Amino acid sequence: MKLVVGLGNPGEEYEGTRHNTGRIMLALVQKKINPNIKIKFITPDTFMNNSGHAVAPLVKNKKDLKDLVIIYDDVDLPIGRMKISFNRSSGGHNGLNSIIKALKSEEFLRIRVGITPTTLSGKLKKPKGEKEMLKFLLGQYKEKELAELKKLSKKVTEAIEVIFTEGKDKAMSIYNS
Image (cartoon, rainbow, N blue to C red):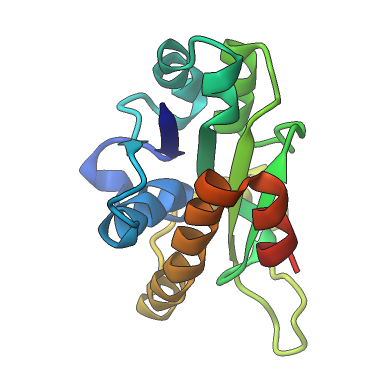
């Protein structure tokens, strides 16, 4: 079963926040994806740090693991950018860490969606310190930033279609440039 999971937190108070980027992107992609590709879309009802509890029961073997794509927020990428990764560590992302622990594997695809604003010169404007980072992650997107995500959703949709029709290596060569 092809499975795409959008990470985030359940509840109205988290809607539209940077930490819910996976859920936001998943909702946008679901509307655009080619209906001929049979994909199950999941937004876990668990909080971000317990995402593994929702994903693990759906991944029963190595084939399921190869057909798993996790979409999530990445503070190390600028808003409007994405990167496909495979078989990597969590990079400090608690939701991803929970999934890796629950699956006892890092061998699945991730689509990292940038959430960090940049300076005019293109340098990331990441918050400093744990308290500021948490405030940033749980902060609401501005309209302009949501428009960037909407625009990026076309590319994310195409990447998912390529992953499931032509393979991860082809998708990474096209969309990670």
